[in-house]
Length: 581
Image 1 (tube, rainbow, N blue to C red):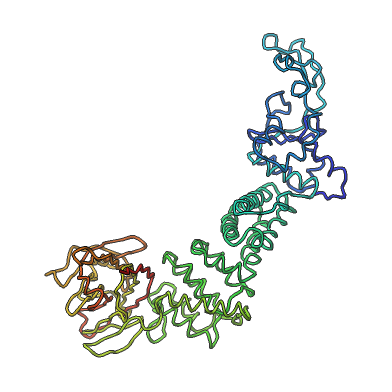
Image 2 (image 1 turned 120 degrees about the horizontal axis):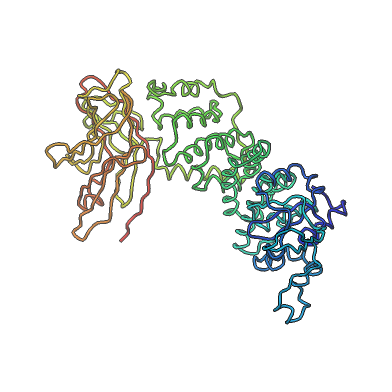
C-alpha cells in the first residue's frame, strides 16, 4: 500500500483507466473494461500480483481495438458514480473514432486508422507474410482476466495506489443505504483477503469490529456478523483467518448492545461449536454472570440438534463456584445427565466429562460478571423473562405420585411400580407443547422386555391417550405403540433406537381450535432426531379443555415389580397461541 505522501503513485492512479496508460500489467475484468496497472507499484503491496496471477486467466498481451467496453460508458451503465470522478480527462486518451468531436459522416463510416499503435497490414488472405506492423508502445507485459466486480477491483487498486477506499466515506440516509453499504463492505473485505491487500483487509475487519454497529444499525450488523462467520472458512491465508476469528468472537461482541443483537438472533443456533466456544471462553464477554452462559448454550441447542459431546465441550466454558454450582447441577438434571442424587448417568458416552464438570476439576478461572449499573439490571431482567417463557423448565414441572400421595416434584425421577408422573400445570389453550422424554435403566445390563412405559396425555379420570414404549428382540431398538383409554389394545408399532439401557425422544402435543360441534382435535407425535416417527389424532370436548380436567402430560410404568425406571423430562419448546372469544 502506498500513502498520500507518495505523490507519483497517488496521481498515476487515474492512468489505469486510460488506453494510453504507461501501465504494463493488465487486469481485465470479466465482461468489463481493461485496467492498465503498473507492476512496479503493485509489487509493493505484498502478494497482490501473485494472487492476480493465481486466480486470473492468462490472456493475450495485445488488446485489439473494440474488444473491451469503454470505461466511461461501462461505469455509467453500472452506476459507479464515485469512480466516474476519476475519469474527468479520459476523453483525451481515447482513439479518434470514439471522440465526440468527430462529425456525423465520420461516425457513420468506420475506417481502419493506419497511424494507430500496433496497426498491421496483415489480412486473412495473405496472413503476416510481408506485412508491416507499427510499433505499439502500449503493449502489455502481462494480462489476466479476473472474475471480480469492477467497482470493488477499482477500489482495491485505489487503495494500492493512494491508500484510500471510498466505501469508508459513504453515508447512510435510509435502510436501503445501510443494506448497500453492508453488502459492499462485506464483499470488498472478502476480495481484499483473496487478493492479499492486507492493509485494507485489516482496516475493514477493524471497521466491522468498531464502527459497523453504529453506522448500519443492529439488523445489518447481525447480518454482517453471521456472514463473516461463514467467510472464515473461505479465507486463503491463515493469518487473515485468525484475525477475522478474533474480531468476530471479540471486538464485534465487545459491548452489551452488540452482544445482545447477536445472541438474540435466531441464527445463533447455526454457529459452529468452535465459534461459540471462542465467545464463551472470552474473559471480557459482556455477560451478567455465569447463568447467562447456560442460557446461551440452551439457545444454541434450541432445535435439539447438537451433539452431546459439543454441548459438554461448551459447558467447560462455565466457570463454577459455590454460588453458580446449583445452576449447573439443575441444568445437567434437566438434560438427563445427572441422577436425582447428583451423580452422572453412567451409560452416557461422555459421563467422565460430565463428572469433571460436577466435581469442578475443569473450572480453573474465576466466575465472570462484566456488567454494571443499568446494563446489569437489563441483563438480569432478560434472564428472568427467559425463565418465565421457559415455563419453569428446571423447577417443579411434574409431580411424582403414588396413588394419591405426592412423593416429589421436579423433572428427574426414579419411577417405580404403581407410580406415575403428572404435569403440574394444566394445558387449556390452543397451541403446541413439546416435551423431551429420556427413559433408562442404568442398574441393568439391558432393558427388560416386560418393562413398558406409557407416555402421553391425561384429560380426566381414567381418560388418556399416548404411546406405550417397550424394548424389542433387538438390543437398542424400541417400539412405540399408540394406546388410548377408549381402545382395547395398542396400535401398530413404530420404532426408534437407543442404547441397550436408554432411549429418548420428543413428544409433541398440538391442540387445534374447537370446531362447530364443540369438539377439539388434538395430535400427539413422537419425534426422534428431529423427524416425526409416528403421529396420532384424538379428540376431546371443548368443555374438558377449558373448564374441565384439561390436558396434562403423564408417564406411567408397568411390569416393573420391585425395579425402577429413571425418567428425565424437559421442555423443548412451548409455542402457544391463545384463542380468545
